[in-house]
Structure formats: structure tokens, C-alpha cells
Picture 1 (tube, helix red, strand yellow):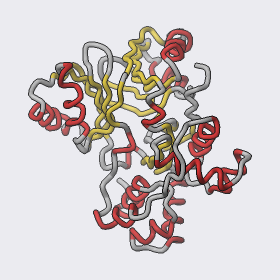
Picture 2 (cartoon, helix red, strand yellow):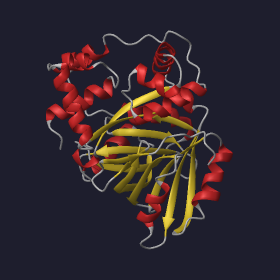
Picture 3 (cartoon, helix red, strand yellow):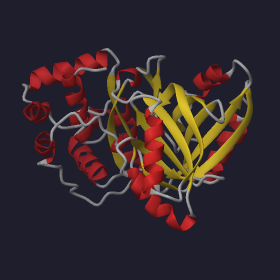
Picture 4 (cartoon, one colour):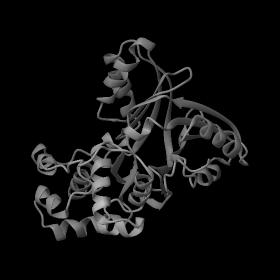
Length: 333
């Protein structure tokens, strides 16, 4: 695992990814130069990184789906590495469960999602079958999960002064370009972003403050799965009565282990992603879930054997970042 000081820094950046080093240092009780060098060390060792992706305000205009892929014997990892380079996939996992691979697909429309599955994925050598579960609603996503390594007082220091939106958030072409630029360097200065986008620094500041405050763009800090306090990823396909879907999703979203919760089409109507300390923790978690939701039924489950892509970032065999793929969901699939 990472050290306690590593986890505290990661947690601080999960709370305020673009906070000045002076503020992060003040919250953690160290100098700004020290905390900046600490972060640079984590990045150089590929143990932690920042990324950017569309927030819920933009997500309402996008189509989310989870694709289960069956592969020919011995072909799963080759297929996984091939599709991991596709910008429409935010995550690719090689799993032990009802399929070989689980892909997290985001597209600009249902037609674009269909084109990706039919024209791109299904024709790949080694793919013998696919099943697509459309997710009409995301109740929880990755930015809510934190390592919980700082105190309430430290968190309060980080959140005492939040940037003001300054303008009504609207997601346009400049915001799309800003999102892609932040995906490469989420802590780039306003001047650096302005030079890349060819606009003024004040324009970048206004749009970025509005996008972050209005939920158009989300930033998150990730850590290598092998070094995480919760290194095991598990997917649970759940069924609840339709009239209890909203309440059940809200209840499940309050579990600290839950990283993702989505309504899905199919025999199961909820898909939940959890991060656990060990596979054995799944037994207690499932029991607690059923205890809180008596009519909940666990339809299927899968354990990730190797994460290949997470949040648009390519991962090596230890779960460290090895590359980035721009999350341009609006590009032609």
C-alpha cells in the first residue's frame, strides 16, 4: 500500500484536485514546495494521477452502457488491449464471472453506441459474443469514492473557499476542448490551458470555474489498484422491484465500498461496482446490502482479475497508469 502521507495527499486531491499547493500544504501541515514534490514523485512512479471526464450535467446528454464480451480461449487480454485504445470506453476489465471482459461504453447517442458494438467490437478477431446493457441513469460514479485518509478539519480547510461559478454553465465546443486538455493535465494553469486552446486566460478561468461548479466537468485523483487500501474490484448485478429502484440505488450509494451504481436494462436492473480490501469482504457486504434492502436479489457477480483501463487511462499489470486515451465521447464511433 501507499504510505499514510501518500494517501493523505491523494485524499486532499480527491477533495480539491486543482487547489493551490499552498492550500493543500496548509491542510496537511507541510510546506507547498514539499507537497508539490511529493505529488511529482507519485506521478513519476505512476502510482497516482489525475484525470477529467464529463459530469452529470453533461452525462444526461450522453448514452452509457456496459458491454459484456465473450472471447475465444486465450484471446481475452489481446482483445482487451485492442479496445482499451478506443476513446468511447472509460474502463476495460478482465473479469472472473459471466463473461471475459466488461467494457464501460459512453457515446453521444444510442445510434453511436450501436455502431460501436456492431461495427467495431463484434467484428474484432477473438470476440465470439457480446451483450449490451444500456444504463438509463447513473446514480453514483467514481469521483465519490475516496481513500478517507484526512480528518474532517483538514477537509474543511480544503473546502472553506470554493471557486465561484461566475456564469451559467453551458457545455460548448470550448468546454469540450477544455475537458480534453484537462484529461492530459488536470492541474494545468489557466495560462497553459489558454495557450493550448488559443483563447485568453480570463476566458479559460470563467469557463473552467463554471464547468467545475456546475458539474459539467469532474476531476478525480486515482491510485494504482495494487497500492490501494481497497485493491479488489467487484461488479454486482442486482434486481429490485421497479417501484423501489430509486430508493434502493440511493441506499446502495451510501455504502463506502460502492464506487459506481447504475440502472441497467436486462434481467438485473441495477449494476453496482464496489472496491474491497479482499474478495472475502464481498460476503459481508452482500449480507449487509440484503439486510438493508430485503427485496434485493443478487443475480450475478464478477471479480476483476486485471484492470486494463480506468477513467480513460491505460493500466499496466500492477494497475499503474501506462498511458492516456482522450475521452472524446462525441467522436464518431
